Amino acid sequence: MVSITATQKIGVGLTGFGLFFLLFGVLLYFDSVLLAFGNVLFLAGLAFIIDPRRTAGFFFQRQKLRGSTFFLGGVALVLFRWPIIGMAVESYGFVLLFRSFFPVAFGFILSLVNIPYLNVVRAIIFIFVQLTVTMPGSKLCINIISYD
Image (cartoon, rainbow, N blue to C red; front, side, top):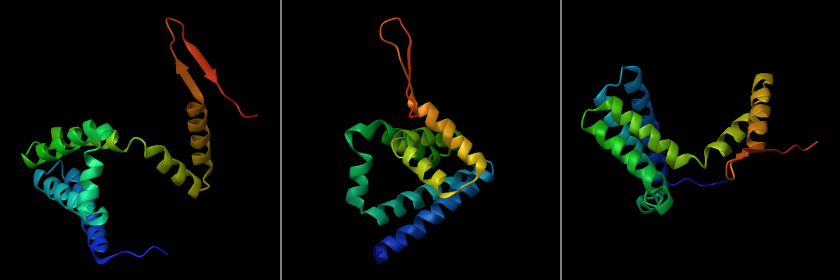
C-alpha cells in the first residue's frame, strides 16, 4: 500500500477545494473571485502533492511549454478579472498539457464500468484509433487495421 505523507494529504484537500471553487465559479456564471480562488488552491494543492520542484519541472518541460504558457496565462487572466477569456485559455492549456494522459484515463474509466452504451463508445473509439489517415503528396491514404 502506498503511504501518503501529511503534506500530500493537505495537497489533496487543497486540490479538492480548488476544483470545488472552480466548479462553483463556473456554475455562478464565471464569478471571477471564485475562479481565481479555485485556481490558486488547485495550483497550491498540486505543489503540495507532487513537491514544488517536481511541479515546476512538470510545467516547464520543453515539450509542455506551450501548454504551460496557455494554462498559466489563463490563470493570470482570471486573476486579472477576465474570467471567460481566462477560462477558455486555461482550458486550452489544460488540454495541451494533459493530452497524452487522456487516452489512458478514458481507457481506464471505460474498463471500470460494464455499461452497454459505454462499450459501444469504446468500440467506436477503438475503431477511430485504428484508422490512420495520412496525406503523402496529394493522395489521401486511409489505412484500416483490423484484428479479426
